[in-house]
Image (cartoon, rainbow, N blue to C red; front, side, top):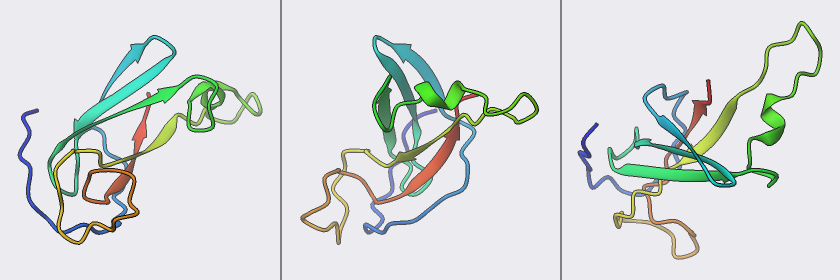
Length: 103
């Protein structure tokens, strides 16, 4: 999907689960890539195995009948400057965040 970035002002907006994200297994983790639902910019996050945000524990079953949780929170890292972005914000994005189901 091509990038169609919009210069929206920075705002911490939660979006629902986003189905159109690609997952690529990389050495030591999983990279999730797609277009931000807030600004349309291309964004990519890598979740490392064994870290607090990693997905290693997401594949364990707590009981035989319970479904496996495979969702991670992804946030915009489009790299574009957005108006009103707080100086203390560690990421260059629009502030949007959402869930991605790892399948």
